[in-house]
Image (cartoon, rainbow, N blue to C red):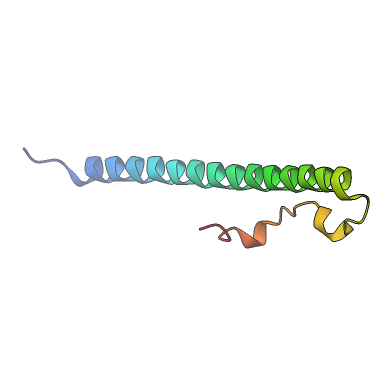
Length: 79
């Protein structure tokens, strides 16, 4: 069976478009999960600091409580 070039090209183009959409979806999912991880880490640091304040008093350094940054320039930090 002979498939004309125009048909196989359109099939290839549709496969490429599908795979590019899948890749974008995976990248968006990865970024979302990284953001959630940073938020959870920040919450954990806050909870630990609260526990330390209750245990030791207010001698905690404020630099330990800085909020996470969500810059897009460092996308491959967790890879």
